Length: 119
Image (cartoon, rainbow, N blue to C red; front, side):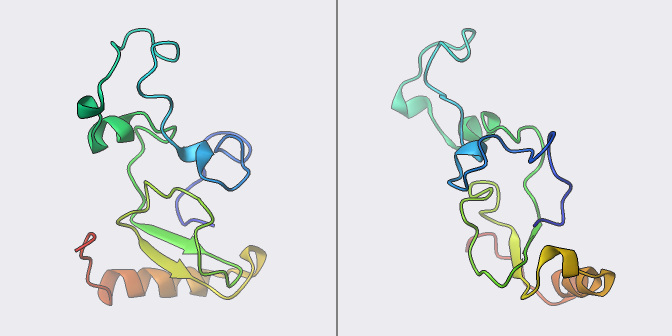
């Protein structure tokens, strides 16, 4: 559903039940997952730390996300990573997507949208 290539093998994102957990931060405060890290206090946890612990790290966040099927929601997909992405919702199924559809999205992204990065 994204213009970016899929990450990993198969579905590329873990448990795949649509709740966003497959893209969530691994237990950032537990030594059992990463023995080299000292225990963290809540004050140590910031956006940079969380981003570094996502399964998609070190891949950059997407600039554009295309959602097909006519649904106007992310369904938990890359919620953290898409915070400042430009979202495009197309009213057609993925197999129906054409080169012209992608060109239209690219043109709108490149020339018609003002990126405000959450402002």
